[in-house]
Image (tube, rainbow, N blue to C red; front, side, top):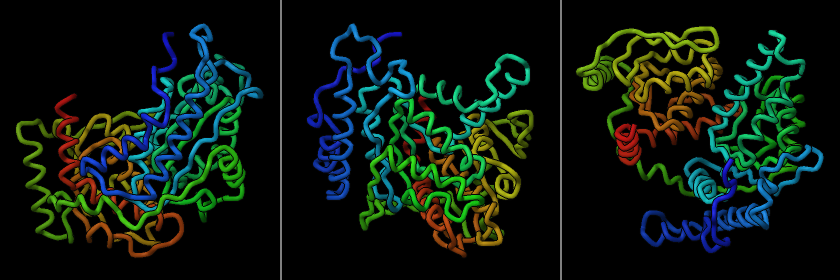
Length: 393
């Protein structure tokens, strides 16, 4: 299996705080006392994980990867960091994840992780149906498989909007925490506001109590949204809707599709097909209706972005109470595009910050993140990273 621990120096001398200080000293970041305090909390968790390393090489797998029985597993408390968009939560978590001395670790967008969980549950049920297993309950074996792959889980943008996710989280994480899982997550909302106003929320609330038992909940809410400073106003988000925006989208599409064969396509996923109206090379073009007015979820968006790294989305309307499902899908779409490092061209009824006309419940919190990410998606830094990623493929 090989070594399960990286060779690391003692913390916090080479921890998140040092990385943050170096970036401030270089001018890459502005000094922020709240970020500095959060970095120290990450360093403390690094120390706790570091202290769990095997004392001797002969103690092969050690605590973090030992095949312990659930009732004997123990782990340091993780972290749940919440606050407004663009405050540096993801940046600090990514520094921590890179420094964490565990090889068996996983960093994922929460919706991506849950899509994986549902896929594993589906496969287990198929095995049960085919007589390949006698375990009727899929949750324990799925949790066991997940914990064998990664005992440190880092989730970006933890949010719960899907009732299927909400109903399974308590049982899934009861199994994961019992097996020694360490959870680190960023979110725009505190745990008590997760799945706010959601259907059958009472059945979800045990998860909130379980979460608060296994993580330290910390607010990171400085007054500055650093992403807003990156907005270069690149012409990839056109508004308002009309002939001028349509012409600009067509011109951008012709540039992206130049030299490529243009046709329609389909993507098979879980026994059904996603229709791609227009595709050319690594680019695909959809309407808002195609992606957000139909029963499409995070797993579908991931499947699309596994094939295409540039999406065109035409005719995004104003969003409000009459389009709650469409708004949730649009939030998930933007999250997935951003998390996958893909590029977005879009035409919309208004600028990102004016698209949501009715702020109610969880969508109001989450749409702040969507606005910030739409701004980030058109920044020069994001485009530069996109180009570097495409060149490296």
